[in-house]
Amino acid sequence: MQCSLCKGKGVWPLFRREDIPHYNLELIFDRDKALNVRRGIVDFYYCPDCAFAFNAAFDQGLADYQVSYESSRGHSAKFLEYMQHVVQDFQDIFGIEGKTVLEIGCGDGQFLEKMRSQYNFNGYGFDPSAKTDSTTDLKLIKGYFQPASFRPEVDIVVLRHVLEHQQNASSFLAAILGKGSYWNKVRLYVEVPCWEWIVKHHSFNAFSYEHCSYYSMDSLDQVLEMEGFQSKVIKYTFEGEYLQYFGERGRVKATGPDDRFQRKDTLASQTRIFYKNTIKALDQINETIHAHGQDAVIWGAAGKGTTLINILGLSYKTMEFVVDINPARHKTYIPGGGQQVVAPIQLKQIKPKYIYITNSGYLEEIKTIVNDLGLKVEFILLDRMMEGCCR
Image (tube, rainbow, N blue to C red; front, side, top):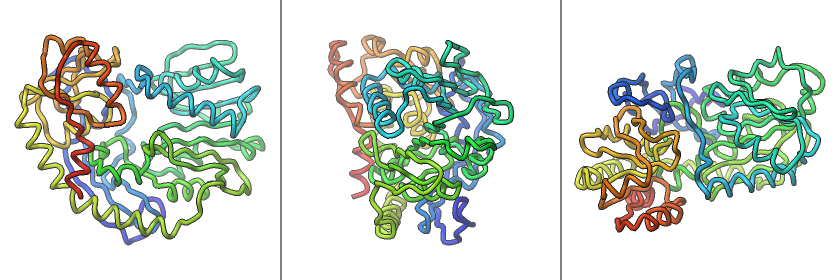
């Protein structure tokens, strides 16, 4: 076994599970279909040489995203506030006014639209799940980006939460960045989940099938450097959960810290502790959830909640409901587990005693919603429980 990024051979196993759904964010309106989704194997390894984690069993050919896919997080006030910080970073570091911005993997186009509400620029967004909306200066195209047929000269390419879905980032970047003199001057923004955060919080529910690559600050910088990009700014963001990368081709002095060797050694030690304690954390959370049974619900039907349900093998017969604030998810069923996704208002009928929260960063937002409904429940922070199991 060798690292899929640096080809190093000193990798070690991290986590393996079979029968994990291909897509966390697929919208399924029938329980039987949700229980019989396509599944794959997650078999993650870690490379201490480049500080990179990858699913060795991932098959890129199975991830065509030709399903009803809903990735929007724009119904969360906390996340909208974060997006505003990203827009401001764009303006401060790259400048947006008058530029041509291409976002590959734009989802529903919300990020481009948020930037467009504040700055004048020409924007293009490509995604299999994109809305087919167009204005004079903002075009969203439903489908994959095809550089050979794309004519506008681009100033900035945006890849928000795209590279973690790619088995071979170098091949992907080479394929999407077209040939021509202006591509040699293009600036690049990348945002990905942060491996340091996953390890620090012992977040084993990060091991979904569609997220096949997890980058540390150093491995992200390395893979983009291999494609001729140099970082202007690379930093932790969203309370450390994500990495932000602003770069351009050519020689640019990085403004981030340059203590790479020390960081890699420290991260390798932390990753080993994470690996050793994962089973203990899984067992404790599984025991808690089964003890509470139908008296509990999970809050959040997107990535972490769905992954947790499938890693634990949690059936709707044990816990029937998952709550989500995104109206597009209501009346759908969790891929693999079959739990019904309900709106917060339905908690008044369900009357749970416990609400499991997979990301405590949203605790205050969730508390406000639940309190406004007049409900009294006990909140159980699963991420804090994971951390506690691993101390």
